[in-house]
Length: 112
Length: 115
View 1 (spheres, rainbow over the protein chains, first blue to last red):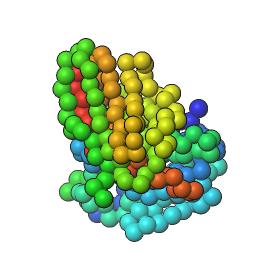
View 2 (cartoon, rainbow over the protein chains, first blue to last red):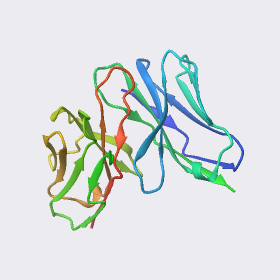
View 3 (tube, helix red, strand yellow):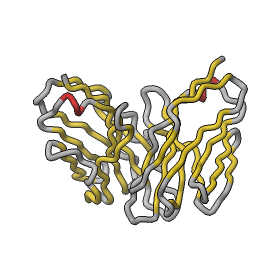
View 4 (cartoon, rainbow over the protein chains, first blue to last red):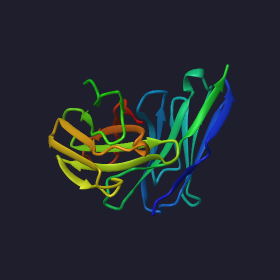
């Protein structure tokens, strides 16, 4: 079955870049997503990438996809204290089952 | 739009009691998802509906859990009887059926504590 793995914790200083990594196992993944969860809130879609793309940039966010290694990363430039949250990687495979498989989430802590 | 609305935001109940969680999806969305989030198991999909019809309930833990969607604007997740291991945050999410990106919009969650 599908499996998505992430490291649990990342700490960076304000102004530095953050890189959150994710690996997945489903080779039929069509879309890969990054969601953000702030304390006491639900998940919010940050960005996504289609599986035939290598990179996507959206303001301070850069998503890199290495399909051969099944590795996805999210880079946040100029990280701010407001970026402190849990970041979830998720994938949607072309299996007909309309369900996302989420990773365990990476808690990003930004030190002022 | 107000987004996905869930109620209650917090629920504390005693073991053995019935618990009902409620969700109002975003108007016009035709998919509705129920998730459970715990420290130990992360975010798990419990069940999802398409046009009010349950499509996949393979994530429902056991018969004590049931979900309904009587109309396009309302869904419930019921636990009867509740147990302490059901303590978690339960999220409802909705999305629009379209080819391509499946952006799910999450509600704020219901934090359930069973004592």
